[in-house]
Image (cartoon, rainbow, N blue to C red; front, side, top):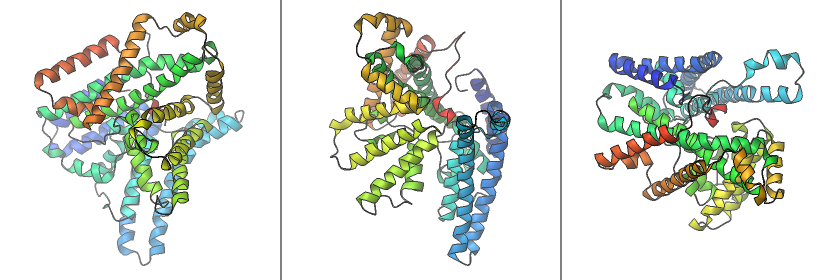
Length: 475
């Protein structure tokens, strides 16, 4: 997708059309481009997307009308309850129908013929949350229903963030569409920032995440071949892989959106520098954490109803978070682990001394996230604890992982580089692309050059290699 040859060509054509056509056509250009992008990925997903846009548009107008003309509170509350129930039901159908039939009824004719129609459409989990936040904000009176169908369609389908977020709020995104006529192409500051985000995103994805993916796939796929040390490293490798993969996607999405003059939510802010699980979730997948807080945790009562209710609400939120990410029990355990961590953290004093503990708590939970099932996760943990250390097989393990001295150096330096840059960004309280923009031209161009050289020399690509799908595309 982003790492295929299709995407830069597609982005170039869309950018050309965007700035050549009359400015009043810009939202339509982005909407049509987004529909084409969705159809390219999966034509079935396009029909689901268009129906979802129509449902959200009509639902929003109905909510606004009902709110203005409702004769009673009960009558008005019935409509948003129905709309939200339909949204959640659709998510359950798409996410769990396949899992249930493949797990419990694999031999039924339905499982082989009709099941493909119930598989999760591309991007559905992400734009469904935008649908929910849009409808809820209208019901609460915080947002007016969007009258322009094209604008609403662009909000739900905008192609840079379509596949894996960020999960945008309508109140922040829709006003930007009305101001697209003011966006000028020869804006060096905006385009330079966009280019920096894109470059840094590709570096994180191609140089770090995809290189680590080769190691992680081998370690999880052939865990019996490795001792405890290598399996422990596998846990750490995946911790860095999923971060660089998802944050890399988010940076590319932010950069692509900036080309068109649209600002997307910063989805990551040095998450592995966090000193508690609560802080981690304020820095990791920020748009999802914000959504769960505003539309699940606070409506449940938040921390306003005593310590027990606060802990219970926290566990509910993380259980739902795990279930949103996947249908397997391993995702439920992953979510519950974060809930337990967060509840325990409620009773602990805060302090930077807990950074390393928080990092390893998160890394441990990632095992359940990476595993294909709960049984594989438990088997990996069991093997990691009981295999012991076998120095005599060290060379053999390196050979199985295809880790020669040069590859070891690249892996080590790339991981350290990410951690050091995150520490710098944490201290400066700004993302790397924005930090780079504050540098003099000579320093900025040197950084661009080094990133490009790093991607071309150390990036994982080329003949015989198929780029790793972005991890969060499957959710």
